[in-house]
Structure formats: C-alpha cells, structure tokens
Amino acid sequence: MPRAGLSTTAVVDAALAVVDEQGLEALTLTAVAARTGVAVPSLYKHVGSLGELRVLIGVRVFEETAERLAAVAIGRSRDDAVAALMHAYRGYVLEHPARYAAMVPDPLHEPAYVAAGTKLLEVFLAVLSHYGLEGSDAVHAVRRLRAVVHGFASIEATGGFGMAEDTDVTYAQLIAMYLASLPRD
Amino acid sequence: MPRAGLSTTAVVDAALAVVDEQGLEALTLTAVAARTGVAVPSLYKHVGSLGELRVLIGVRVFEETAERLAAVAIGRSRDDAVAALMHAYRGYVLEHPARYAAMVPDPLHEPAYVAAGTKLLEVFLAVLSHYGLEGSDAVHAVRRLRAVVHGFASIEATGGFGMAEDTDVTYAQLIAMYLASLPRD
DNA sequence: CCAAAAAGCTAATCGCTTTAGCTTGGGGAG
DNA sequence: CTCCCCAAGCTAAAGCGATTAGCTTTTTGG
Image (cartoon, rainbow over the protein chains, first blue to last red):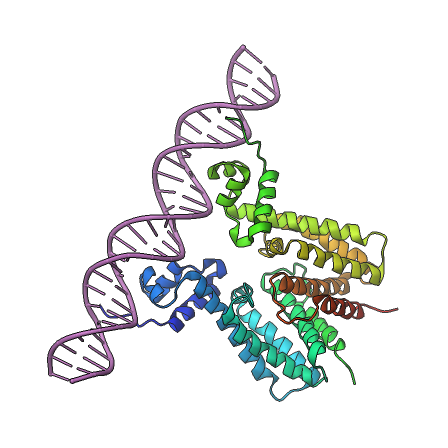
C-alpha cells in the first residue's frame, strides 16, 4: 500500500477545507481523516490532538489575515490606508465566514497566537503612526479599530444582522465613524 | 427515594452556573446532571437535547441583557441614555464573561432568539428615536452600536486586549466615537 | 382512594478522541 | 546496490459524552 504523504501543513489544509465547507462544529478528526484518505489515529503523527489542530487553524487564519492586511496597506496612507485595511478585513471574513469563528478562541493565551497577533498589531500601528499616534494613544486607537472591525465582521459572518438594509452602507458608516475618531490635522 | 423536583428553568439555572464557573466548553449534560443531583438521562425530561439547552441559555442571557438595558435607559435621554446603555452592556459581560460566549451562536436562526432579540432592538430604537432617527437610518445606527459594543465586549471577555493600558479608557473613547456618529442638533 | 402522567433510573448504543503497539515503506549510510 | 532505521500508517481497544428505550415510582387530579 502506498503512503499518503501527509504533513502537518496538509492536515491543517484539510481541516480548513472541512471548516469552510461544513462549519466549525463539523471540524472533527474523523472528517479530516476522511478527507485526507487516512485512518483517524494516523493524524496523530502530524497533529498531537484535536485541540492543537484548532490552534493551528486559528494561527493560520491569523497569519493569512495579517498578510493580506499588510499587502493592502502598502502604498496608501492615513484615511486611505485605514479604509483599505478595514475593507480587507471584512473581505476576508466574507470570503470564509466559517473560518472566522476559528480565530476567536484563546486569542493570546496560546503562545502560538502571539507571533501572528504581533504582526497584525504592527500593521495597524504602522498605519496609525501617520496620524502621529504613539504609545498609549496608539494602543487605544488600535483597540477601537479592532472592536469596530471584529464586532461588525463577527455579527455579519453569523448572519446576525436581521434587517434587510444593505450591510455595505452600515460598514461605510462605521469606517467614517472610526476615521472621525482619529486625530485630524 | 424522593424526587429532585427539577424543571426546565432549574436545569437552565444549573447550566448557567456551570458555564459561569467552568466556561462554555465545560457545558456538558454530565456536568449539569452532577450539579442537579440527577442521572444524565433524567435531564431529557426537561430539555430535549444539549443543543436545545444551549439555545435556552442563549435566550436567557439575551433576556437578562435586554431587561437590564431597558431598566437603565429609563429616565435618561440622548447621549446620557446611549452612554448608560453601553456601560450596562459591558457591565453584564464583565460580570459573566463566560456566559457571553453563549449568546453568540445562531443569533437569529433560532426562532427562540427572535423574541428576545426584538426586545433588545426596541430598547435601542427607542433611545435613538430621540435623535430623530427612523427607518433605515435608525437600523444602521443600531448596527453601528451593536458592532462597537459587541466587538469590544467579546474581545475584552476573552482577554483579547493584551497591552496593559486601561480598558476603561478605551471604552470611554468608543462611547465618544459612537456618540459623535449620531446626528447633532 | 386510584389511575395515569410525569420524573427518575438503569442498560445499551453510537460517534468521537486518544493511547498502545504492530507493520512497513523508503531514504540514507556504507 | 543493499541494509537498517525511522517515520507514517494501521488495527485494536478504552473511555467519555449524547441519546434512546423501557422500567419503576412518585405525585396529583378526579
């Protein structure tokens, strides 16, 4: 019998596919094993435990987001950059709604998250530095941004906005609201 | 052997206690049964399934929040009322951080949520009506409020704010930011 | 006082995670 | 080119949580 040629990366890929297709609750070792064409216990050669797999998924999503945001911020500044960041963040969540839920648990308790989280933080800080924000002011500004963006995205991703009104309009208002909270010249 | 004298309400109470003390992941029928002094299958006389229990918990939290917000808005108007609402919302989450996570899943898909959600919506709409907001404008304003408040609360409840800066300050800024987005006379 | 519904219980099944221990493919050292 | 070793897979089995079936007993309305 030939070998499957699995790897930790491949397992995480398969797990993400399961999450995308069937939701976070459907993330089970049985499902991942089925998708990779391997017996369930074989996964332990690459992953350690289901809990660890969840963390790995969260880290991956975090990294992808950070990468995407960093890319989109290049060549823009101030309001333009902030708006682009906010749109990119929401865009990722809209593309992978189920995946987003995987990012939430144990954000900073898990050391593995710290690296990815730090990179994301740095992107935010870099953009805000053009407003002259430093130190505590910058921290609070980043937190405001995270609250707005995460709050909207998580509600939208779970279908929490019941009314028929266009959510694009709401988001545009949120962006304007946040920008207005930044120092003006 | 005497009877335990359980009821759906009592089961939900016990479940909330479990969540408060050990977190949402620890919510298991075994844990609830242990706390109520009953065998696991006996719970099915009151609850239907673990999934249904989760929904019942979510509804309860929703209702408590709505009640609390409604109470705090009485006798206040405009900025005063909005700020009070936002503080009360955050206060509830800080008091029961683990409980808050139970509110998120399936917000509107579950019909049971609709009633509680509607009440909460009405409180928001009533407060915003003093700004002359109606129809779509009011819907977007409520969504902005939900995004800010839920975003901040959920990040804070899961310990997502890593830096040492005082979160009270951040929240005060968020309130000011939101108020600034409402129509001024 | 009596019947029947409601509340509990025990036994058993099923799916999922995890551990233990065996087998073998395949690459590198000689 | 061959042989050895390790990593990748597998099967077997234990354990836990949810759920169902079916029995017993308390309680309560008539």
